[in-house]
Image (tube, rainbow, N blue to C red; front, side):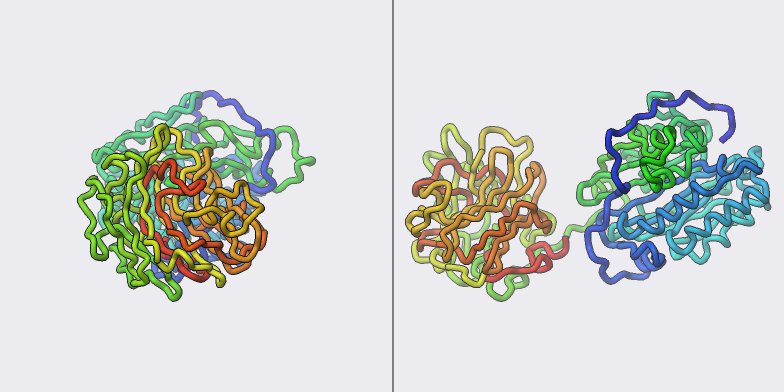
Length: 628
């Protein structure tokens, strides 16, 4: 960085407790078969780092700003940067690190000796984690742009350095600008690494790269794009304004733009010509203790939560015994101020819809989601004899929703108490991974009790099924946002009757049913079952489930014990207590409510989608959402 434009130092915040290891969002799935693009991003796993999972919805982009004070003539010390590179290589699989990008000012003077030492240090990372490097004003003659010709920097960090990397897409004719295509989160992403001063030719080249990759979300990296005050609010620099006007604002693909050069760090959100957000960030820690000590920032993309979690830390300090860290190292090991540790909410599908619209999956036919042992399967898209109505229209009492297995476990609609038409309506809303693209909207509640339920007929086979070989009960649920009113202990599904009628004596009350899925006042899912064989009531509890978004719920029993899953994730509070079968009493199965003492109070409040019951335990990959 040049000495001009420096501003004050933001305060350093210390955390009371530091993690034993810094964790960025980790891979959530086993790698599947990769296409050529996937292999290009995932195939270069180092022996120490394991294998990067290009298909996981969670991955990290590592960002390394100005390292110039670590390569400063005879006071150079590359040890912190070597520690950073060893960390990235060793943690690549655990943290699912897709790529690392350096923001320029690799060295202080750009001499052959400094550049040579830096280039040698980067060999620690080479072949283990793909990366990009760009020139800052201290790496080349700062008065020049990317048409400057040969330099020690270009010889060491030009296109030849990246050709062996499977992510390398190409470089501008001058060699100072490059682009990289990586596969992460099940899709391809573009990284543009642009020179400290991009010429008109360089801008034309960058536009050509974007034009050739119109469907790829892009991260733009450069050395000088914005500066910030001590409050962390960023503003475009003169060069940043040129990049914004000439390249960024007119290309909706660019959603994140990163630069170094100035300090303190900061960020802002700008609106491009398409009306979408572009996040602009300054990342630079050369003013901190030990020249920043190889400080890195990780951008943890979580496509499920629709966020990017940002963390900033020094692997060099982190690797030291906490008792042996100097006072300044202890203060600098991790930065937690609002400009260094934060979360960006990004609805990735919506943000990228203008250039890469997501094609929703087509509905899956019922026959494709009825594995061996399926006892009942209901969906609300018009399948069966009674056609679904117009979204928003009332579902009339007496409407029959057919059991698509043909086993005769059809459901019939009836309203509770004096509930009106709005207690149950048709809906086109659905979980993205749901086989059918429809649901039912329930408007149940208390004071007074209201709602609607769907129940099997008096002699349906499901009423007396004992499930001695285990079972899998699945449904899709969405709670309204805002979640208004008192809906504590509302039922989602159940069997009618009282557990005392089955001879059970151990439960909370002999008047509750033998099996039910409910919602507690804290929005914890509760699955309580009275087994056929045991005099017990093992109960599974989830975490506080979200409102405003669909979730898939599965309860799996293997004949010995019961496990609940939410969105394919096993919950913590699953009892180890023995549980064989369900003590059904020959009474109806119910969707939309739970009885107490043989009577319904409130009904369910929210949406319920496809619901399936299988007479055996299913593995997660056979749930109704195998593609999620």
